[in-house]
Image (cartoon, rainbow over all chains, first blue to last red; front, side, top):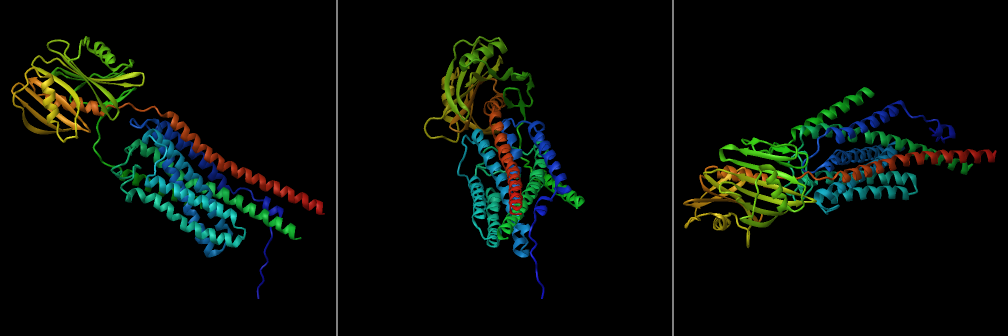
Length: 250
Length: 288
């Protein structure tokens, strides 16, 4: 017969967690990369002669969606691994993925609405792509509210893992809807735009040169760095909460 | 670990780059001349006389010039007079034809002048804020009389401009042919044109939206298709790059604000954890 002893955190274990070198490096590279890709989009890429300066927001608008895609994808990975291994670390990554992904999804929605005002002459229209993106953001906002509302830790982790896995369907619908619903006015940049698309532009070499680094940054470094930071904070918070319980029970 | 991550990033970047490049459409593009104030199609085969504040193309064989300019006068008709006086030294006098048409980018004044026995000036002009856009076709071919105009189609939109060609010839031709014969349909870069005419005068027309874009010619009209196509490509292709830098600033501010809120929330939460720890420490000390 084996006995397991749960190690309760002490103040030292909560405090003495310096930022890993890899995370320090990742943070610096991400910051430098963010400034670099921003400069590419704002100063190096040419001005679109039909849309004007507002087209430059595309270098944030599209990558931010893919950043959300990565973050929500990590929520799926975290959820599956939590359900499999029951390791809280994976649940923390899943939760952090939703928080970061939702911020990126909001950036995507807000920049899209601001772009639409001068190009479509409206802030918002119930286009399939816009509607699905809004539903996606609301789905993940609901995730955070539910997560905050369930008190039983084990139940919360299991329920949110399942929720996070199924919520990813809203991301896939948003990603592919403009390729299957012809009634959209949302332009497609990679590939042929739908017939009704308004505000399309050609992916010239200048656009590609500014877009690819930005896409790469938002797809990989930004979500990974932010999720890492967020999950570390969550880890510390959980340790503090356990410490509180320990003190209260003594 | 870091080396593997770097390799993965390189691989992803190559895949993204290749994907975007391979997926680029190979649609036909129209060559444009981009000036500080506006953009207009580049007329290949014409002598480009453009400068920074106006676009101007000359076709010597037809003694014809197509000019686009943004004039600092709010009244389009006065702007047209001013621009043609400045560019060609022409005093326009009274218009022999004047009308207005509503196109996608605003209400255009359609003006046709014949300042002397040889020269004619066909002008499209519209207001653009406190300025006016003036697109003019000026020809001085002693062997030909070429006029350009746009007429809104009446009633239901039709596929060809035969009725408007007839109307334009009635209004402007010196000798309108008694029997108009629709001779051919021409496919030009600007669109599908209908050509109709008779002895002494020829008309060409292209339907775009609810309007007919027309050219009528008398005398030597061999260059009429080329001139009509070039002028109407200029009229339909002209556009001003919108000034929407304010929206870009707003979108960037909103993006930074959302990112800043997320990152600040990390700091706030870290600080709260620290405060909780201090509280626990003080409770511990009080308990001891």
